[in-house]
Length: 491
Image (cartoon, rainbow, N blue to C red; front, side, top):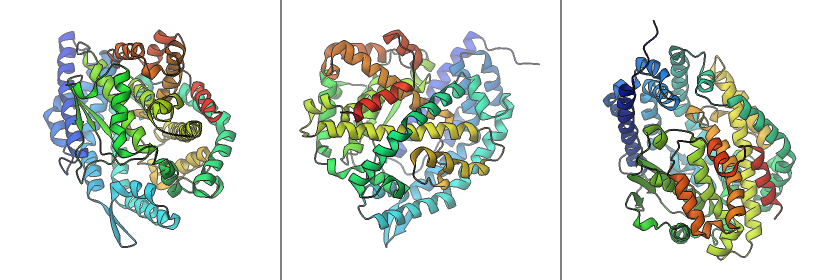
């Protein structure tokens, strides 16, 4: 006999407990990745909220709002792999590689790759990273995948892919748009990618390898334009133009202190929405670091302005393309010519805009391929059999040999890849609207800030599609990302 649907009182009780569960998890992630504690201890949190993650709870919540049902299902699956989550975090924090006599923490290998001018040493660094991934991380990822594949049947779904389609994820339609975008931008990437590799690293796209990519996008020649001590002031000034005083936001906490184990990249931890949002920064410098900070600031402001009266699912769950879209909108200012002319002393703003468009093209093509791969991966009977397929799809999209060893580590849970892809379309179309309404310097207009705060107050209640339609009347389309890239490349 099927379980009775939950009552409104039971749904409200679930909301309240779920809100505390996510808050506790976010605080634990903050403490670990901000360098306050060495271990990531999520297992005890799952035990504290055991009722939320039971199979029976997920089954009963099928009659609740879809976001709560999805949360219950993800909680059930996450509970089964909580030990795997802790182990991966612990191993990553403890692992070290010795390259040319130098000991480097695993999490700093990508930073080392991006900062290494010597190509042979970059290859050795990448080889060390892949060997550690294969030996220490992939067995954990693989076992977690096996657990998920078996457990999803209890949710009355044949596989993870079908489960997310039941949650309303338009995976097949998005995949079709991504395939079309890959087709129409293929020649452009071959030309632009080849030119970028030659100009920056002295080798063509055909000769480039994965260990060259972090160095390519590190772009040290632009460091003089993006100094570390100017990052936070530039962000504060940008937000001030929009009517936001970052330092006076009592619900936003800036973590600026350097710690040995602190994540080298900025991140946002919305522990209480909107009451306590952590923006964690460890300024290193360079355009990539600036983009990371501005991206996380976009998340931060959206969470900090979310109405406290919204239900839990609109504050913390919902369509992740919405919060990623706001993050992309702020991030992309860093290579926006009008913003550069206003905020930085950069003599070649058009060149920077073209560089930003080329970088976006790389990542969009990469994530299009990731979506196609993940759709196949989650329908395959044997996860290990997908290893060569990962290399095939990523190599075809990027035109440089992908490392098959990343076939598990390169998967974000909950089909989060769709959030990134759709956020790029959301940002491209909303940016066009803001420029049409407020001019090319929309980011310096208080009226634009008023509109953003109004939209941020909705949290993630509306989907990106609904939000874009309500504001602009347009349909969310991946083709808009291609248009945005072409505009940047033609400057």
